[in-house]
Image (cartoon, rainbow, N blue to C red; front, side):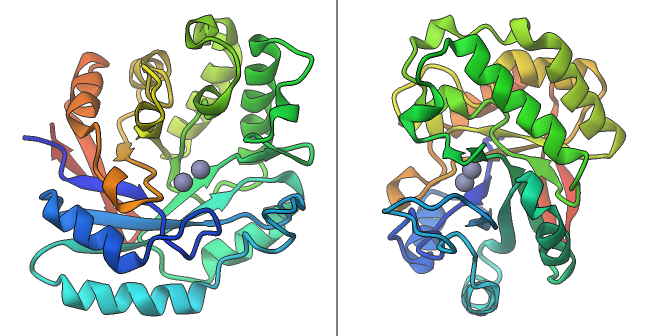
Length: 272
Ligand SMILES: [Zn+2]
Ligand SMILES: [Zn+2]
């Protein structure tokens, strides 16, 4: 059965999307999806950029929820519309994140690293004057250091996200060079019953590999992990649910028999 749930969607409640929530839902429904989760950004203490000034990544959760509830009613009996959030992991934000995650009845909380040492991963400065191994190593260390401070999330999103935007050739990325720290992160996730996300947005950006690389997905499975969600990370309606046929093949190749949907922060296992 094809994957019918897109567990990572943005709309104009995120500063990097102009799409209305309704446009995103319409696109999902027209593509035959049965379950979607809006996971708009909340990145407390994100660095200040001219295009993204201080505070712009703080989600207005109340009006966001109000719109989700309206859509949920509209699509009742047709498609589940989940109240999710993508919480940015930053060492200086772990107290605010803890309060945020506890203060609402989310269906799905994604945990993500988008900023390191005051730099957006989308800022080329993050990659300047160093090689791919150093950049990815820093990213994995940031994940590990963050998740031990704040772990009230359900699924770790796009675990090797710099590969999506890095200036190096894609084939230069060797995840096995980071085996020890990748294992540290995956073991922590598994011990704490956290899932991992297969994020397909890099394919929409012309890359060959999803995020994370199949190496990481396979390793999560080998170490005993079972909870995997699939997300397009769409910020535009046309990207919703794209490359999910490829996602199903990748998961099967990595040994998974199920993917998960989330409601009330509880995973349901769906046969691939
Ligand atoms: Zn993200
Ligand atoms: Zn996202």
